[in-house]
Picture 1 (cartoon, rainbow, N blue to C red):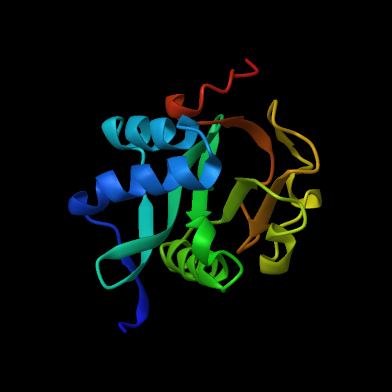
Picture 2: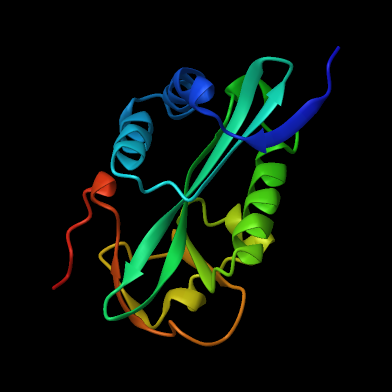
Amino acid sequence: MSERMIRQATPDDRTAILELNTRAFGQPDEANIITKLEKDGDILVELVAHEGDQILGHILFYPIGVFGKLGAIGLGPMCVDPWVQREGIGSSLVTQGLNLVREQGAPLVFVLGHKEYYPRFGFSEEATAEFQTPLKGPHFMAIRFRFGPPMSGRLVFPAAFGIADLA
Protein backbone atom coordinates (compact mmCIF):
# COMPACT_ATOMS: atom_id res chain seq x y z
CA MET A 1 0.00 0.00 0.00
CA SER A 2 1.38 3.40 -0.95
CA GLU A 3 1.60 6.38 1.35
CA ARG A 4 -0.74 9.38 1.23
CA MET A 5 1.08 12.51 0.11
CA ILE A 6 0.32 16.13 -0.74
CA ARG A 7 1.86 17.84 -3.76
CA GLN A 8 1.30 20.68 -6.19
CA ALA A 9 -1.39 19.87 -8.74
CA THR A 10 -0.24 19.37 -12.32
CA PRO A 11 -2.13 19.74 -15.63
CA ASP A 12 -2.33 15.93 -15.77
CA ASP A 13 -4.44 16.02 -12.58
CA ARG A 14 -7.15 18.29 -14.01
CA THR A 15 -9.66 15.59 -15.07
CA ALA A 16 -9.34 13.74 -11.73
CA ILE A 17 -9.67 17.04 -9.81
CA LEU A 18 -12.84 18.00 -11.66
CA GLU A 19 -14.35 14.52 -11.18
CA LEU A 20 -13.43 14.55 -7.48
CA ASN A 21 -15.02 17.96 -6.89
CA THR A 22 -18.21 16.88 -8.69
CA ARG A 23 -18.38 13.67 -6.64
CA ALA A 24 -17.57 15.33 -3.31
CA PHE A 25 -20.03 18.21 -3.75
CA GLY A 26 -22.68 16.13 -5.53
CA GLN A 27 -22.91 18.66 -8.36
CA PRO A 28 -20.66 20.16 -11.08
CA ASP A 29 -20.69 23.79 -9.79
CA GLU A 30 -17.27 23.65 -8.08
CA ALA A 31 -15.69 21.85 -11.06
CA ASN A 32 -17.06 24.58 -13.32
CA ILE A 33 -15.56 27.25 -11.05
CA ILE A 34 -12.17 25.51 -11.14
CA THR A 35 -12.29 25.30 -14.95
CA LYS A 36 -13.07 29.02 -15.24
CA LEU A 37 -10.43 30.00 -12.65
CA GLU A 38 -7.84 28.06 -14.65
CA LYS A 39 -8.99 29.56 -17.97
CA ASP A 40 -8.80 33.08 -16.49
CA GLY A 41 -5.36 32.51 -14.89
CA ASP A 42 -6.78 32.96 -11.39
CA ILE A 43 -5.21 29.95 -9.63
CA LEU A 44 -2.42 30.95 -7.23
CA VAL A 45 -1.82 27.68 -5.36
CA GLU A 46 -3.38 24.30 -6.05
CA LEU A 47 -2.59 21.14 -4.09
CA VAL A 48 -3.77 17.55 -4.29
CA ALA A 49 -3.66 14.77 -1.74
CA HIS A 50 -2.98 11.43 -3.37
CA GLU A 51 -2.23 7.82 -2.69
CA GLY A 52 -0.34 6.36 -5.59
CA ASP A 53 -2.07 7.71 -8.69
CA GLN A 54 -5.43 8.18 -6.93
CA ILE A 55 -6.36 11.83 -6.15
CA LEU A 56 -8.06 11.83 -2.71
CA GLY A 57 -8.32 15.54 -2.00
CA HIS A 58 -7.93 18.96 -3.58
CA ILE A 59 -7.52 22.57 -2.47
CA LEU A 60 -7.22 25.76 -4.47
CA PHE A 61 -6.28 29.35 -3.60
CA TYR A 62 -7.13 32.34 -5.81
CA PRO A 63 -6.61 36.13 -5.74
CA ILE A 64 -9.23 38.44 -4.22
CA GLY A 65 -9.04 42.09 -5.02
CA VAL A 66 -9.64 44.64 -2.28
CA PHE A 67 -10.92 47.66 -4.17
CA GLY A 68 -8.30 50.39 -4.22
CA LYS A 69 -5.88 48.48 -1.98
CA LEU A 70 -3.54 45.55 -1.85
CA GLY A 71 -5.26 42.25 -2.52
CA ALA A 72 -5.91 39.15 -0.49
CA ILE A 73 -6.31 35.43 -1.10
CA GLY A 74 -9.37 33.18 -1.26
CA LEU A 75 -9.48 29.50 -0.34
CA GLY A 76 -11.74 27.16 -2.24
CA PRO A 77 -12.99 24.94 -3.49
CA MET A 78 -11.56 22.34 -1.13
CA CYS A 79 -12.79 18.77 -1.07
CA VAL A 80 -11.94 15.23 -0.06
CA ASP A 81 -13.23 12.07 -1.69
CA PRO A 82 -16.29 10.99 0.33
CA TRP A 83 -14.88 7.50 0.96
CA VAL A 84 -11.85 8.90 2.83
CA GLN A 85 -13.39 11.89 4.60
CA ARG A 86 -12.70 12.34 8.33
CA GLU A 87 -9.21 10.86 7.97
CA GLY A 88 -7.31 14.17 8.20
CA ILE A 89 -6.79 14.69 4.48
CA GLY A 90 -8.74 17.97 4.37
CA SER A 91 -6.97 19.30 7.46
CA SER A 92 -3.59 18.47 5.93
CA LEU A 93 -4.53 20.22 2.67
CA VAL A 94 -5.75 23.34 4.50
CA THR A 95 -2.71 23.47 6.78
CA GLN A 96 -0.18 23.00 3.96
CA GLY A 97 -2.02 25.39 1.68
CA LEU A 98 -2.21 28.12 4.32
CA ASN A 99 1.49 27.66 5.09
CA LEU A 100 2.33 28.09 1.39
CA VAL A 101 0.31 31.26 0.88
CA ARG A 102 1.61 32.72 4.17
CA GLU A 103 5.19 32.06 3.01
CA GLN A 104 4.33 33.81 -0.28
CA GLY A 105 3.34 36.93 1.69
CA ALA A 106 -0.45 36.71 1.77
CA PRO A 107 -1.75 39.16 4.39
CA LEU A 108 -5.07 37.36 4.85
CA VAL A 109 -7.14 34.55 3.42
CA PHE A 110 -10.93 34.46 3.05
CA VAL A 111 -13.10 31.35 2.88
CA LEU A 112 -16.78 30.63 2.38
CA GLY A 113 -17.22 27.33 4.17
CA HIS A 114 -18.44 25.32 7.11
CA LYS A 115 -18.51 27.51 10.22
CA GLU A 116 -17.71 24.46 12.38
CA TYR A 117 -14.70 23.37 10.28
CA TYR A 118 -12.58 26.39 9.37
CA PRO A 119 -12.24 28.05 12.82
CA ARG A 120 -9.91 25.20 13.87
CA PHE A 121 -7.35 26.72 11.47
CA GLY A 122 -7.79 30.25 12.83
CA PHE A 123 -10.56 31.51 10.53
CA SER A 124 -13.23 33.73 12.08
CA GLU A 125 -16.24 35.70 10.94
CA GLU A 126 -14.94 38.64 13.01
CA ALA A 127 -11.88 38.95 10.75
CA THR A 128 -14.21 39.90 7.87
CA ALA A 129 -15.96 42.74 9.76
CA GLU A 130 -14.32 45.65 7.87
CA PHE A 131 -14.71 44.11 4.39
CA GLN A 132 -17.71 44.54 2.11
CA THR A 133 -19.09 41.59 0.12
CA PRO A 134 -22.49 40.03 -0.54
CA LEU A 135 -21.13 36.86 1.08
CA LYS A 136 -21.27 38.26 4.63
CA GLY A 137 -22.57 35.85 7.24
CA PRO A 138 -21.46 33.04 9.56
CA HIS A 139 -20.00 30.97 6.70
CA PHE A 140 -17.76 33.79 5.43
CA MET A 141 -14.54 33.87 7.44
CA ALA A 142 -10.95 35.05 7.21
CA ILE A 143 -7.58 34.41 8.80
CA ARG A 144 -5.04 37.23 9.07
CA PHE A 145 -1.35 36.34 8.85
CA ARG A 146 0.02 39.82 9.42
CA PHE A 147 -1.32 43.19 10.38
CA GLY A 148 -1.26 45.93 7.84
CA PRO A 149 -3.04 46.48 4.56
CA PRO A 150 -5.58 45.57 3.53
CA MET A 151 -7.51 46.23 6.72
CA SER A 152 -10.85 47.04 5.06
CA GLY A 153 -12.50 47.50 1.70
CA ARG A 154 -14.80 46.08 -0.92
CA LEU A 155 -13.81 42.56 -2.00
CA VAL A 156 -13.62 41.78 -5.71
CA PHE A 157 -13.77 38.06 -6.52
CA PRO A 158 -12.62 36.41 -9.75
CA ALA A 159 -15.33 36.24 -12.43
CA ALA A 160 -15.48 32.43 -12.04
CA PHE A 161 -17.50 32.85 -8.85
CA GLY A 162 -20.23 35.01 -10.38
CA ILE A 163 -20.35 37.23 -7.27
CA ALA A 164 -21.83 40.62 -8.02
CA ASP A 165 -19.57 43.56 -7.23
CA LEU A 166 -21.07 45.94 -4.67
CA ALA A 167 -19.94 49.02 -6.62
